[in-house]
Image (cartoon, rainbow, N blue to C red):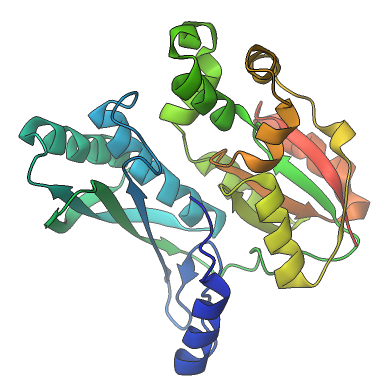
Length: 299
C-alpha cells in the first residue's frame, strides 16, 4: 500500500505527544513487556487496492490479511489475533460481504491466526477492508527500516515487478491473463514471507530489514531519508522474470518501470554486513528458493 504523504508529519506529532515510539516502522513492537506485543493495522479500498472486476470476494479478504501480516513478520512478530473492519455501501450484496470476511478468516487460519472481532460500518460509496493484527515477539526487534548502515549490501528477498505486471494485464489485456499465471497470482494472491522473515531476523549477518510493498524506488527513498544514507543502486543485478519481460513487451513498456515503481511485491529489503555476504547467501539459499537479488551498496 502506498506510503502516505503525511507519514513524516504523523511521526513528528506522535513523538511530540508520546515520546519515543516505533511510529514509522513496519509495525509497532511494545517495549517493557515480555513477550513483546506487536501491533499493525492496514486498510485496502475498492478501486484503489483491488477491483471487483478481476478479484473474487475471497481473494479480497485474503489479500487484506496477507499485506498486513507482511509488516508484522518483518518486525519479528508472530501474529496470533486479528480484528476485521468491513465498511461498505448499502448496495453491497450480502454474499460478497460474507465472502470477503470468509477470505480474511481463511487466510488467518493458514497462518495460525484467530479472527476475534472487528466492526462493520455503512459507507456512502466505497468498500473497504481494515485489518488489525496483534502478535508477539520473544525479544525486542533490532532490525528495522531505521537500522540500515553505510557500507552494508542491500538485497531484495522475492521477485520484483510481478504484481504490477500482473495488474497491467488484468486492467489492459485481460484476455491474455491465462498466459501469465505467475504474475496474475502475484497480484491477486500475495503471500507474506513468514518463514523468510523469521530466518532473516535470526541471521546475525542481517543488520536491517523492511517490507517492500510501496515500490522499490519509494522504499529506497524512505531508507535513505530515515537513515541519512545514499544507495549505489546497480540495476544490472536485477534479473527480470520471463513473464514480466513478456508483459512489458506485449504492452510496449519498459519492464524496469514495473520493478522500480510498481509496488505490491510484498518482498523484503535487507541490509547485510558487507564482510558476510557469502555466508549470508549460502545460508539463505540452503533453506529457500525465494529469489535473492543484490541491489547495491549503502553509502
